[in-house]
Length: 199
Length: 199
DNA sequence: TAGTGAGTATGACAAATGTCATGTTTTTGC
DNA sequence: GCAAAAACATGACATTTGTCATACTCACTA
Image (cartoon, rainbow over all chains, first blue to last red; front, side, top):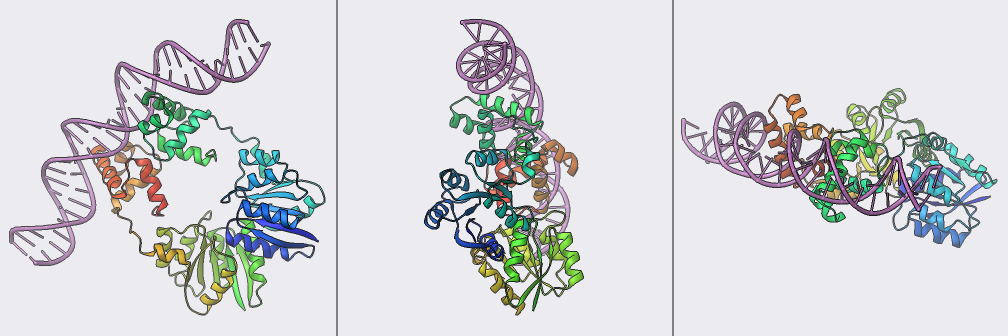
């Protein structure tokens, strides 16, 4: 019997996944968590075979939790909406056994769990294509700037926050617009978001 | 036996909800759709008692689909992540029987379905607090303008598209900023989106 | 019917935004 | 260790954006 802990902050999906997996003859959902902290506690308490982990959760993210479980016998499979380069990289470094997407059909979950428990790894195929996605062309500083722009901050406010002059900020914006191949801040935000580059 | 169609673009949740509801003695999931178009077709084909409808789906949104099902005997219950004023208002005008949030515990779903099939309505309590919050304060013309702004269009482009002068467009923007209580276009877009007022 | 208010429209002005040439510092590859 | 490239920073300049006073139309109503 494969013993499972699920961590997912969206109540409806948490419950429904529980129902889905409990239908499987060889699986049992022994505990459910609604955040990363809770997930850690439950895994340590119940010592399950596998923990299904959402990434974006309150208190402690699924990636934080996965990192803390790196040397724990419980296997971790990340289940998230986001096929993001950054997330995937962190997950791999945390030595997770699987990375699945919520967009995938639900019957893949049970089979992925069996594959993982048998010692292999499972990555959603979309992640492979993603390796060929475009890289974020903005430097760290430029990313700071576009994040503040997206918050609706003005040039002056950004300058103050980053301890640089107005002119410098305007120059960063100019470079950002050029790199993203758009012609104003609003388009830059849309493009950046659409590429999934916002942290 | 309550016959159910589920429309949800996220595969994992679609399958898991199916499993969850099929566990109920008195319910049967007879079809699953991954977008609004498909949902409409399946409802017309199978004539279920109730259709569970996500809002943000490709091809046709759940709200569009719900509007088309207004005079159809099949009841509609919206199931979404977003407790947005605009969404809820549109859903109510489309005469849906329920509006639930994905954040709620999963066991509320089955009981909500029974309540709805028996002829009553079910709204997530979070919506009641929000219910008579604020109306969209923008006039039709102002809404045209903010939509074009959100597309990243410049004042000049908007003026050309609406056959008015630059000055007029800028004035609309000024009024919009005032009404939304923000200080630039980017904040206006965020606020308008956050309120769920974009059509 | 005159008065009120909302919606639409305009242009003058001030402020914020975007461009560009240029210089400095930090990384990188050899 | 050193050249080249990349990142970071600035100010001058032109354009775009936001504010405000003003005016016209239309619907409502006292």
